[in-house]
Image (cartoon, rainbow, N blue to C red; front, side, top):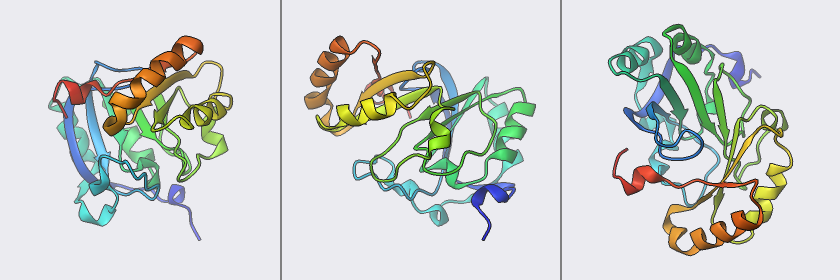
Length: 207
């Protein structure tokens, strides 16, 4: 049986694509074009894009058409997100984007084999489906969603597994932000290797 990574995909299921500001993590506040792919088998109970889970609900886009849409904007960075984007082979997509002079960033849980060529890998592991060990050392950024106090131990577990150069972020789960943000602030003060990530796009009402 072939793995997803064995297939070259020239079309991908796209839930949405848009030009906006990166709202969280290391590139927060920077202009970026987002391509949100359909399909996810991780199943986070607090996911805010559950409509992305079923890939068959979303239209298939030709990769070259997607790149043409990106090129209509001044975007320099393209963020591939989901869903779980690594359920698809992203080799062709990143090749076309990089040939067009664009930087490629990905947001992934790391639960599927890495495909594509990336300028930046944001790894956000989930308890529902663990990341693959080979992705951990390739991550440029580790972003842990804090839903309750036990998630700090979860964060430390993966903070010890990524490379020393990886940027470390703690981010409150949106619906519990008022409760957990004060806990995160105190935790970071006590453990300053971590930084705070906030979903500023939700505060300034951009996609």
